[in-house]
Image (cartoon, rainbow, N blue to C red; front, side):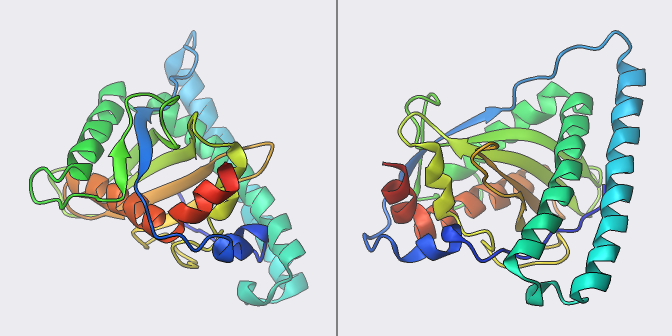
Length: 248
């Protein structure tokens, strides 16, 4: 799976940083697995078709991006907001298909194990420190935010090497969907290649009201999930007040 990610667009989401000045307060987060895909009559053939479709969308995007660089220059940071968004929309078509492939091919137990490890990290089990900005919610209805595990891939758990965890981030019953506009599109930082420990791959949009993140670590899978919980903890610390202000 290609590992490229892109710089933030200047938007209302970025401007929302100044909306709230209240000190950080913990938010309730519900951790769960993404809804399973519909079964296929021939799972192997279906997985192969998803892989083919994913790779085709990547090729389409790659060609599109090259044309955009010819038109707007090699430095993406200097592109107009309109050009960046046009580019991102094409990229997100690939992201959606890649997520569909990941969710169809992953073992459900791997996602369940990921959620268990994230929750253990939140409460500080093992060597993980307590994530003080997160309160684990028992249901989506009782949560401000919802994390759905979509897929994971990379080096074997017995090998030191990049391990990737993809998750979808939405709102729970305590907030309106537009609360996610409080999360800047360049958070946690602009990045070209997804070797950052936490990166955005799909921006919040009214017709697709969620954000897709990917977390990376090169040690054990539980370390990847600790990176994930730390990502969410930092997100709430930095933008939780604005999330509440935008979503109330």
